[in-house]
Image (cartoon, rainbow over all chains, first blue to last red; front, side, top):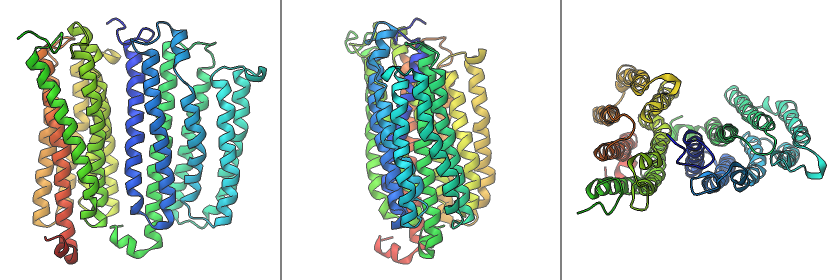
Amino acid sequence: MENILSNVLTNVEFSAVYNMLSLGIASMLFTSIFLWFARDRVLPKYRLAVMVSATVTSIAAYHYFRMFDSFNAAYGHEGAMDAVSAFAHYNVGYRYVDWFLTVPLLLVELVAVLGLAKDIQSSLLKRLVPAAALMIVLGYPGDVKSNLFGLDNSMWGLLSTIPFLYILYVLWFEMSKSLDKQTEKVRKMFLGLRLLLIATWGVYPITFVLSMNSATVPTGMEVVYREVGYSIADILAKCLFGLIIFSIARIKSAEDDKNFAAQEGH
Amino acid sequence: MENILSNVLTNVEFSAVYNMLSLGIASMLFTSIFLWFARDRVLPKYRLAVMVSATVTSIAAYHYFRMFDSFNAAYGHEGAMDAVSAFAHYNVGYRYVDWFLTVPLLLVELVAVLGLAKDIQSSLLKRLVPAAALMIVLGYPGDVKSNLFGLDNSMWGLLSTIPFLYILYVLWFEMSKSLDKQTEKVRKMFLGLRLLLIATWGVYPITFVLSMNSATVPTGMEVVYREVGYSIADILAKCLFGLIIFSIARIKSAEDDKNFAAQEGH
């Protein structure tokens, strides 16, 4: 079949990104609604962690709506007539604005759900949140191939890795001390969660590096890899992550309060 | 009367699908709103099951809005001028993305509402949820007639039947043990629910097989059978199913707690 859905992408390429972005909308939007309602199903001290999870997926839902429309306007059959123009019209900024807001908040969720002493929690967040924001800010000039300040994309990618490594250090070394006070069940879930975070964050640099080869304008398949890769990583890192945070909050609520456990059938 | 609603379908064909998709929107949207509010009318331990039911119909409501718009854009009188182009523009992906998210969640509802011991529940879900997701993923390449990996649509349909049979096995053999602890009333409703699930799921392969005969582009009547068949099955499998889940949760709440029963007039 001819390319009738897009002037730049094949039908299969166009549909793959289109449906993946729609899956992104659905996943983010309904995880949000579920988590907003579900906050009552944990003890008050864990509700903020669940609400931050709901905020993250809500912010992402907004950006996926925008990206879906932007992709249609750029790559749809009423959109751009060539790859250069389509690439220029598709707004990469939505992803980075989304990450700038959500990635620091993901670390807030992770720390908040453990119910640590306030001073430990605040000391962890004071280091994790700025590092996460910095990581995203430094990644953006590389991803849009801006050559800002005369630095090429690989340099910006490298700079963005420094706060990333610092976050790894804090999560793996500093936070391990705080885990001793958690029960076996919670510790296991936290370790899984931390691994999920790193595994899904790994998708971003891999996608970044893969799409670095294309000089200025990505080919159709590069558009597909990039959008599909980022979307799957986002869904795992935000929806699945948020739902695991909710499960940890449920388990900790049941551990803290026998009445709650009986009432909720734990 | 001439075809004045669509360039490809007769007026009757076009209206049948158009109104059926709108019925889908109305059913999904207002079952969702009802269930979100109604979650308070069961005991806390059954609320998650009702909330998952509400999530399922909410996800479907989103997709029915999208399908309605996509159908109009493809088959409406301002849409495609021929059947090939109309078929390409109508996005089949929405149904599969919807099922990919909702079918595993339907099994979560079904297991959650029984209030089983946590380890039994988790063991059932660990097998049912991936099998359901796999069933949908394997069905998609067949339904869009992609010949992915050189396999034709009947092969993909067949592959997708394997996880389907596994789900049947788990629901019929493994879960029967868990039913012994339920009261007569709940057991009866569960058996009805399981039958509803299988009966409505049966519509999908039947529609799949019926539309397999058409080589690449379906005739007008094939479009009608397919969309009407899938929509009726969806409404029964999600709205009716969710409302029965809610009824079971009400009955179990009344059985568990005399105060609740008196208060709610049971």
